[in-house]
Image (cartoon, rainbow, N blue to C red; front, side, top):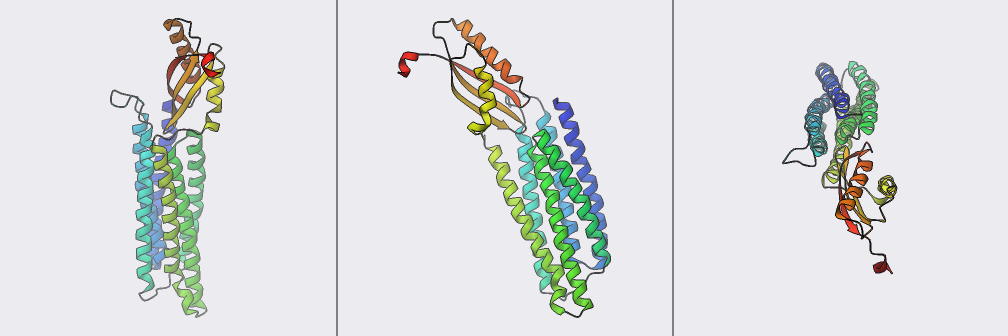
Length: 300
């Protein structure tokens, strides 16, 4: 898949998330106010934060698409990881806000929400789970940290809506059967939602930061690259092979040993052959090869 096709698929997913979240925010916000549901209003705020998250993903995808330049010779692939960090921060702030409003509601007069809120929550769960499945699978296919984090942002909205559904249902049942403590189910659900969102935001943010800090693939993940290098007959030994992740692609730093008696030009041609073979792999964006003379006597 070329870079333009990758961007088009990812950008479509980002815009789909923006449009769907706008619709859900309006529906849940309106019904939450009409039904007087703290949990549904908090859930609407969560969907609103997803709009900002999807926008950040789109901006990150556009930046990552830009070709290498003088200031960024390794390309702009890390823009997607940075966008993922921004989404995680937005998600964390949304979790704090949901928790604050829900805890405040626990110490005020309880208002039992109307039953219409249940239908809005069920609709949200179905739509958001479908968005999660679509974006997660596409993010894995395109190796996009930003899309994967954005997918989990939708999944956190599913958890949020499930908690809201339980809370709203408990409040309605509490009023119907005159069980006073059940009437607090709505704001309690809001607190539970905030904890789920905060935990997810923390984990996703930590993973994205790890990928941004010049993370190299573990040795078992570089086996395919080592086999490619070893397939070049003139390569006597692979000294070091570091495959650095730059967003959705990999840059390889490599040291190989060759016959010490060949000319510099011949050694250079071997390096070009190794680079050319590695560049055929769809994940590899660039390769830097260092040529060393092989000295078998020194290894004894």
